[in-house]
Length: 296
Image (tube, one colour):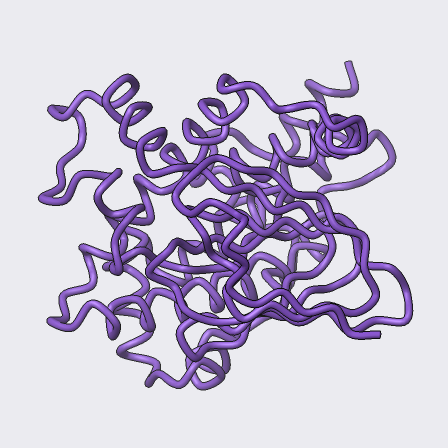
């Protein structure tokens, strides 16, 4: 049986509210009552937001606000467990005033105005890579238990949620502003594509000579990809990949049963010499010194 929930007047708009769901089938044509966090604990929920389709998988969450139009569909053989948290605009504004020094934020738009406006950047995030996501994973069971016990979550809980939303979105706002195009929707689309490219790099940074392929995959020429990526994130795609490899190499070197050559090959270098040179340039210390330090 398909459960539908369309424009339910009982649920207050622009208020703080938390719901926990465990469903096989579900459809809702009005899923964003306030600033909304759609977190999936198990399974997958499919959203359409302003005409764009988003798959929210396990340990991921979608952010949208009341300016976002769309729907949510759950259609699964296994039960899908989700948590929906609405944070009122007034809470976001109150927390912004308390935690942000306007002199420290070089922007022409206030962060709370951005979060509660049609310019907000709707997107899906893996929970392990954001302040908000880490918080949701940590308190997931507590949220579910409080819902089962019909316990009202405290105002402090929503303050903590708002703090993390703001912290995560200060760089997002700056990234949007660094993309110099006129139309806000075009700016959002470009950032969405760049974040998709960044996600590909985060999972495939050990592959070689594929930046051009990523540019093609997201629909940019290689030149425009390099230019826009650097504008948004302040670093070139190649440098971003090198940083990922170097950080991964540092973790590998802490293993007592690994050699510099092993690490070089695992990090997509052809030989130990070129790897050692790149590593020392990046960290100011040779990989052999790291091995000696950690094995002593």
